[in-house]
Structures are given as structure tokens and as C-alpha cells.
Image (cartoon, rainbow, N blue to C red; front, side, top):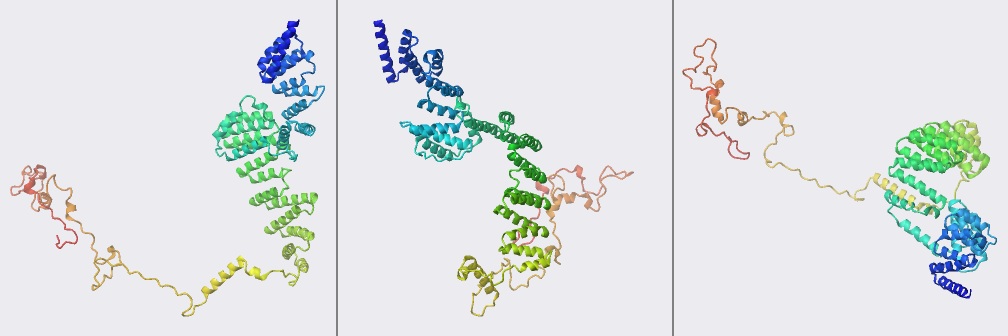
Length: 585
């Protein structure tokens, strides 16, 4: 026993030394020997679990704790919860922490991490706030950073107001966030193929445990959109259908499907899909109906688009929606429909916010619209309502009198008594400042210029216009100043009296006539038709001398003529001299 005790003591010394040096693998060997001597040594078991955790062997450490749970009891509650957390068994870690007999500071730290992973941000915020208030150690900066992350997540995912907790802005994590924002802002290489490479990185193992559910959902949406933009229609439909089944009340998967259908020119099918989602999920149908109205406008169905927009209870009384509806009804020349839009909006504000700026602005716009389209009687009630709200409004009173003048002149005269007199309408205007303003200066200069142009200038005064020098016309090359010019020189050549037409050259007529190699003179001599005494080449019926030429003729028929010698018979054709020469032909 003494030797065994001495051996165990030396093993503990080895464990202590290895723990200080961070050599947990060697420490495990020594602890295994210790546990071989005493299998239920709680301290040795606890040290073994810590060494396994330090080496990242979370499953093995958890197995040791489960095997010796009776011996360990609550000794290794923190290590068990931590191993479950690292193995992404977050719900099990939460149960282990909540079932601990005592909530130590390190358990609270882990509890905050678990709540953050479970996206229970409000509880997580309370845990970190309590830790920062009641602890003073070197980990205070890390706790404040974690608290900042919790507040940011609440603002991002739960739309909670961003509270100012007085957190420092000089931590390394916040500096890293700022650097990340700057680097993303400077990244100009944003294209589809670059996005495709980045999306592939989200498929790495373990990414799903590091991101919130909203972030994972956003990644799935981006994958579907990327499939659409890269013309992978089947993949886009598959991903968007999967997203719709996972998030049945979320409008974005339906909008992606609709976008894909619109790219395929299936607008009617897209509208049917939107209508179906709107009927099934009216609580989140606002964006869906806006898209539906847009598709109706693309198809030219303006009235249907108006009906859809007016069915959106959340927006139908907003000033922007009223303006859009009035414009669309006016385009369709449906003045009654536009006036009805004004009427419903005014009634809504009359009951909810009577006399407010938005209410009075709608009444004024309705009156102007009715006056524009000749609805004087309908405009009078709106103008009277505005004037009763502010009897000092001269502009409204003038409009009311103008409207009554076309309907009830007596009423217009009685109202005109409320107009201020000319003396009371004088305004405190600085005349000098008004005359020296930019607009007045421009008007004076313009008027002076126009007046100066219209007034006759006295002799010797004003600017003298420079006379333009007349350029001498060009004369023909053979111009003779002594000769009388041709009176018909302005007429076309064909219309002049001495025009005899173009002369046809002899050479042109001779081209292509006669046998090959014969000259013009020879061909003329050999042409029997031009010889008066030439008998016909073919014999007449009954003639005895039909097979021979006439006895007194020297002409040889063309068929029997041989080509004459080039030197003996060829003559030079007369050449036409160039223009400007002394001779004629």
C-alpha cells in the first residue's frame, strides 16, 4: 500500500505539472492510471472530464459523466452543460443549467450563451445586464460585447427599439464590425457569378449552428433568387416551393415564384398565385396586393388595379395611395371614381383626426380636383368647410366666391363682403430690396432691350450696323466683257432656239458591223444593199442564171468573201481632235 500510495502521489504530481503546462494529453494518461487504482475517485474523474473538454473531446467527456453520474452528482454540472452546448444540443444544455442546484457565475455566463442561441433575446439581455452589474473581473469587456450583440439582434430581428445602454464603442469586436462595413462598401465587384461563389460558402458544415434562424432564412431566399437570375427556372421553383412549405405565412417565397412566372411571361398565372395567397393569409397580404396591382397595370387593366389597391385597408387612406388612385381614375376618365376616393379618405380623417393637417389637405385637394373638372356644386361644400376652419384664409374665400358666381350669384355677392378692402391688403414690402432682386433686374434689362429696339435711332447716335461686303460673283473662264451675253443663257440647253440635238458620231455607228477584220470602208463597199446596180443575191424562181453572179458585177457575196489582207484594205478611221485645238475634223 505504501508503494501504491507513493505511486498515486507521483501521478498526481504529474497531473498538476501537465495541467500547468497545458499538456492535457499527458495528463489524461496519468489520470487513467489513477482511476485504474480507484475507479470512483471523484477528483480524478472531474480532472479527466476537464482534460477531455480542453482537448475538444466533448462526446467522450459526456460519456464519462453519464457513466459516472451517480458518483459525480452535481460536481460536473457546468462541464456537462458546456459539452451539450458545444455539441449543439442547446435544449439539453438549457435543461441541465436550469436543473443545477446552484447558479454560479460561470453557469450564468453559459446560460446567456444558450439563451442567445435559442434566440430568447429578452431573457438573454437580463442575464448579461445582471452579470455586468454584479461582477468585477477581467471579462467585463467580453460581457459588454455580448450584451451589444443581444441588443443588435433584438433590433434587427424583433424590430425592438435600440436602447442606449452606455456601451463602449472602442472594443475590438465593434471595431471589426466597422471595418467589415467599410470593406463591404468598397467592394464594387457585385455580380451574379460573384454572388454564386459567396453563397456556396454558406453550405459549409456547422454554419447553421452559428447563424440565427432569420439569417438562415435569408440565405435560402438568396439561393432561390440566385437560381432565378441565373435562369435556373426548375431550381428556383423547387427552392421557393420548399421555402413556402417551411414558412407558409411569409410572402417572400410567393413573390419569388411570381417573379419567375413574370420572367416566363405568365402574368395571369402569377396573379392567380398572388390572389390565392392573399385569400389564405390576409394578415400579410399588403405587399402581395401591391404586387398584384402592379401586374394588372402591366397588362393595362387600370380599373382592376384600382380595385385591388382600394382593398388594402392598411394603405387605402394614406395620402400617397389617394394620389395614386385619383391619378389612375383620371387616366380612365372615371371622375366619379376619383371623387369617391377623396370622399372616403375625408370621412376617415373626419372621424379619426378631424381638423388635422392631413384632413384639411385632403379637403383642399378634393376641392381643386372638383373645380378642375367642372363640379362646382360639389366643390362648394369642401371650400365652405375649409373656410369655416379658417375665416382669414383669403385664398379659399376667393375660390368659394368664384365657384358660387357660376351657381348662385347672390351668394357670391354676399360672400364678397367678407373680402378685405384694398387699404387693409397692403403688405409690408421693402420696395428697394424687391427692385434689386435678381428677377426684377432681369425684367428691367429685358424691357429696356425691347424698348431700345423699337425706338427710332437719331442720326449719329446708337450703334451703326456694319455693312457687309458684297463678294464679286465668279465669271466664266472665256468671259469677254465686249461681247453681248447670250439672252437665252438662263434657259436649259434643250429649250434654246439654236439647239439641234446631239450629233451622232460616225465611229459609233460602225462598231460591230462587217466581217471580222474588215474596215469600215470595205464593209461599205461590200454592202450589196447600198449598190444600185447590184442584183439580188438569191435567184428568182425560173431564172436560168440564179447560180452565178451577174456578168458585169465585181461584187462577191459576203458568204464567199475571204478576209482581206490587213495592209491592203484597212484604212484609218478619221480621229476627232480634242477640244481647244485649232483644226476641225
